[in-house]
Image 1 (spheres, helix red, strand yellow):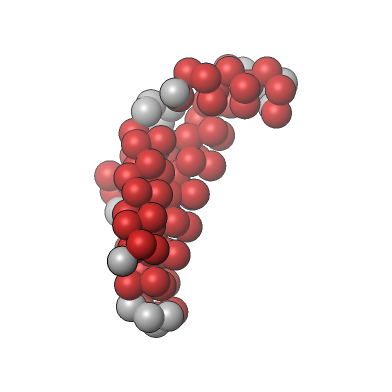
Image 2: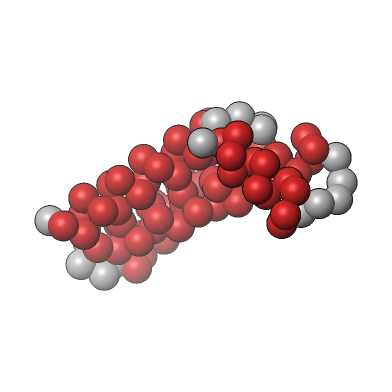
Amino acid sequence: LITLLGHIFMHYMMPFWEPAYRMGVLNSILAALAVYTLHLTVLILTTRNTNAALLASISYALSPLNWLYATTPEVFALNNLLTSLLLFLLARVL
């Protein structure tokens, strides 16, 4: 899945710069989307407590492991996004 997303991103959305840089940008976007979906999930679970959602999303975004995954072109950022989407959908159903 990351290969397909990377191909679309590298050839159609960002056709300039080096391929490694483009994949790094894609991973940063995926990690930012994971933080955003985590923020939305905490908003749902805490019945619109914005302070808790902001604290949770900032804590997750600035954690060393997430920062490492966001800046290296690997599959971990996509995995984090898919996991946070799954948690968001689960919170939405419940």
